[in-house]
Structures are given as C-alpha cells and as structure tokens.
Length: 156
Image 1 (cartoon, one colour):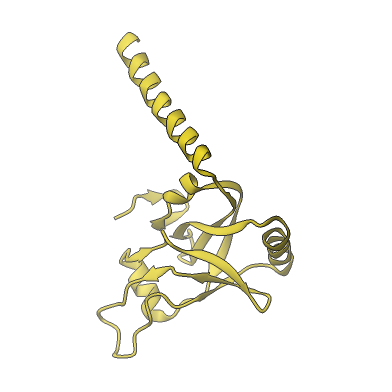
Image 2 (image 1 turned 135 degrees about the vertical axis):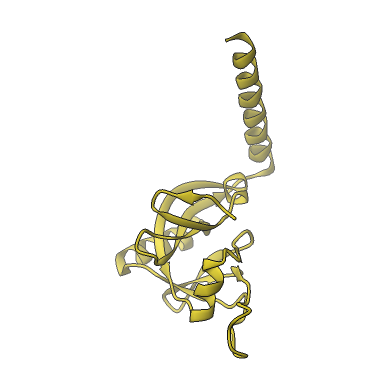
C-alpha cells in the first residue's frame, strides 16, 4: 500500500514518468468514476504507469489507467481500462489543448489520490519526452548524487 500524504490518501504513483519525460507543469484534475471504481480505488487497486490523457471532442480523457474490478460489485462492475473523463476548468483545458497541439507535449498522470475531502483526483504533468541521451544523463546524475551522499556519510 502506498504511503499517506498530508493532503489525503495516495492511490497510485507514476514514478516512470519523471524518468521518461521532462515535467514542465503540474495541475490537479477531477476524474469521473463509477461506484465500483471508487471502492476499488479505496482498496488501492489502481495502476497509472502506462496511462496518458488525450483530447476527444474538446474534452480530456484518461486512457489506459487500470482500475481493477471490485470483487463485491454486482455482476455489472466496470471495465478496468475504460477511458475516464477528466474534469478541468475551460480555461485550463483550452491552455493544455493548445500546448499539446502546438508544442507537441503530452499530458501524463503523475499521481492518483484522494484529497482531504475524500474526492478522487489525478495530478497531471504537462511533459515533453526525453531523448535517450537525456535519460542516460539523468541516470548518471542520480548515481553521482547517491555516491556523494555515501561519501559525505563516511567522512562526516
């Protein structure tokens, strides 16, 4: 189970996104869910590692987010990977859609969580994809930071 954050309960985190993308801006969005999906999220059964957000007819949808079926649901539960509508203000959505279309950016979910009021939210990142050499550079920097920390502990 994921650790609790101060604003609410963390459900899922996309740790690969920070490695594969340069996150330029973060924003919070609501998400339209069914009852069985909310129950499954409360049990912590979601994955957003392969998810992304797309524009369909002027609305944003979260694609490929996997929310497992809830065992206690009636026979008509939910489809685990169905597209889920994201809730944003019109101005925010227009700005994001412009960035996606003009600048070739991607909307990637970074975290899924329940806020302090118990409402399911998704933290989206407006991101640009990294090239292979950028990923290598990130990994080298991370390794050097670890080594530096070890050296400081030994010396200090």
